[in-house]
Amino acid sequence: MEIDNKRLVIGLSLVFVLGILFAIVNGIYTSSTNHQLPLIVYGISFLSILIGAFIVVMFQFKISKIQLERVLKILPKEERIVVKILLDNNNSIEQNKLVVLSGYTKVQISRIVQKLVERDVVEKKNMGNTNLVMLKI
Image (cartoon, rainbow, N blue to C red; front, side):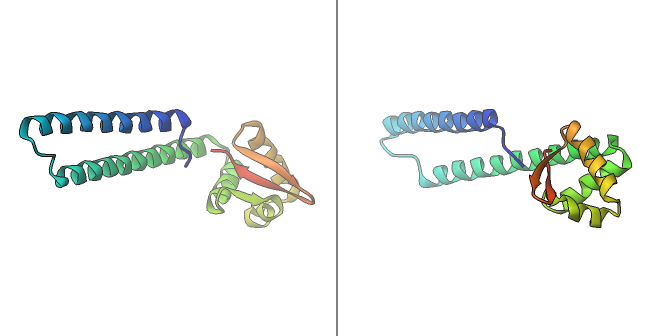
């Protein structure tokens, strides 16, 4: 799962703003009570940020999975089989291994992969006698 640069910048900016707000609250508390905030407050704040980040990542993973299932539903059967094989093999596989795992002929796999390349679902890189097929989704 890739994290969009825009989302990463927004997330880091929000954490930075949260840190500044925490410093302001600490300053106000210190000036009014002549004591610093208890250490437990810092721990709870850090734990809250970690739990929030975990929840965001989990929802992002679920959204990606739902989008992938929608894409698989609209693909023809042959293309769906190839994409599932790619998913089972860490999103990339050599084309000759794809022939063996799918049960299709070399020509059929070549045509299926070409259709997926045209749809921008996979990327194909030449590796001498075979091609490396990589999932782009």
